[in-house]
Amino acid sequence: MAEPVGFFTDSSICIGCKACEVACKEWNQLPGNAPSWGDGFDNTKQLDGENWRHVKFIDQVPDAPALEGNGAAWLMMSDVCKHCQNAACMEVCPTDAIIRTEFDTVYIQPSVCNGCRDCISACPYGVIGMSAQNGDAQIGVAKKCTLCYDRLQANMTPACAKVCPTQSIQFGTLSDLHAKADARLAALQAQGQNTAQLYGRDASVYGGLNSFFLLMDKPERYGFPNAQNAVLPRRNNVKSYVAAFLAAAIGVFAGVKALGAPADGETSAGEK
Amino acid sequence: MTEHFAQPPHWEWYIALYFYLAGIAGGSYVLATILRWRGGAGDERLARVGFLAAFPLVVVCGILLTIDLGQPMRFWHMLIDTTPGSAGINFKYWSPISLGSWALLLFSLFSFVSFLFAWKQNRDGIDARPQSGGIKVWNILGSLTGLFLASYTGVVLSVSNQPVWSDSWVIGALFVASGLSAAAAAMAWLGRSRAGASGEARLGVADGYFALLELVALVVFFVTLSMAGTLSTTLRGVYWVLWILVVLSLIPPLMNLAGGRARMSGGAAAVERSSVLVPIIVLVGVLLMRIAVIFSAQY
Image (cartoon, rainbow over all chains, first blue to last red; front, side):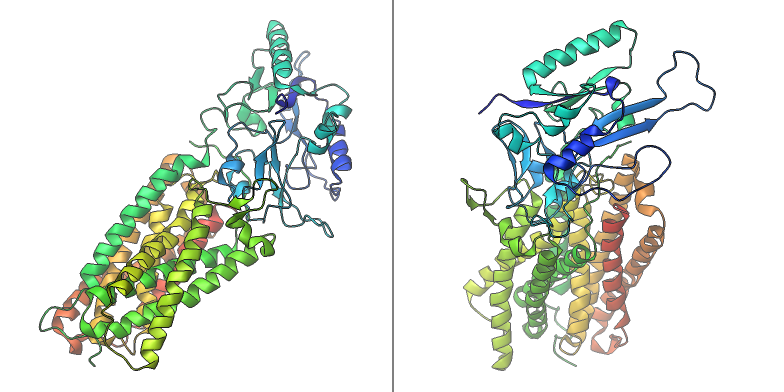
């Protein structure tokens, strides 16, 4: 197995240019989005089966005029599959279509997936969606960022990281990326950016994320569960089965009590 | 307060109907087994109604589950791993969908054989219940699988990261209780010409017990959602109306519980033949409950 690789996305230097979105779509031959004009610059809206990179624009513009130095009006961040170490999607997938590659990334095999969508209900980041491209041989299967698996096999950098003009998206081995992230966080904190924090750098969130982030606010602002809420679907397995077993046992007992042979003197079934 | 950022899987009508019919199929088999082996000698005819209903229902279940897939022709991937280089059996005991796929297959087998046997007995005009121990074991194993089929559908929902679903661990219990209730109602309705006075009254009492169990599970469901802060999610929009209808649909079988017990001791003359309406109310209520649980978490 090759050394684990991933992304380090530094949201403090994202300028919201969306080059990553375009490069991802071009390389992976994903269809373009229909024009969508809403309240803000975010017309991609969400990650799904055909948007594997999504630049989030989180509007924090204050009602009062901004003062000099108050530059936190917008949070921008290029979101992507987190390639979790403890991946909820892999956990529930009944077909074993979701695998961990030799690069330690999480990959959905399009020829194995049958489109049951259990992975969508499990992914805590809302990353996975269904392919709906007309004429696509892979229609009806779950899709998400592959971390450019084909490019990795050719020893190439993933498309989004390759084009990012500010190096907000960095690709590399996890050990290198961790070192870079630690240094960047220390520099920001030295500048007084006390809300800056790393998300997914350590094992507190899903055992660690191969695609981890430097955030300028708390994770919930970016649509990420905090460590307390970063839970796996299996947390409910035992409790749910025990409750169902108890209900079934009580139900059978009640059924036997109600449907058991009538006592003497009562009318037998079949009599009219 | 639990925070969720998951996207909905868009499990819609096919899945709602599958969850509904799986509960009735599994429940019918269980009740038929109880009637055959613990009921009176005359209950065999009513038991066969359950066995004859379970298999066609589970066939419909399989069809619904298959056509809901994005790639229906790959339904068998649930059971067989086709990953290049690691092909083999797919059995993930920690994944309720994986377990449920095997349960569906097994229950289809159990219910098919029981269906054929019941059909043959009816065709040959045999009214007596079978005496074979092998058939008894078959029915018990089929019932265990049927109970799993009726309940795992709820566990699938809980074992996720969706709001509402993952906030409660009681949905499996809720589904098995309501599945048994709907099965009793379906058998009372389908077998009204075969049940006889006592059989009909006892199915009514059984349905009352199941409705009581469902009510308890429903209360726990709402309490767990309240603790997670997602009660308002399941009650929003039109769904609060559905939930009220679900609760109202529990009243007739609960009233039957008291009334039915009285009728059982009062004999055949006391049985009201106009009770066709109650099974229909129960069947509609159970369907509405499935719809409210499934859709309110997604839309």
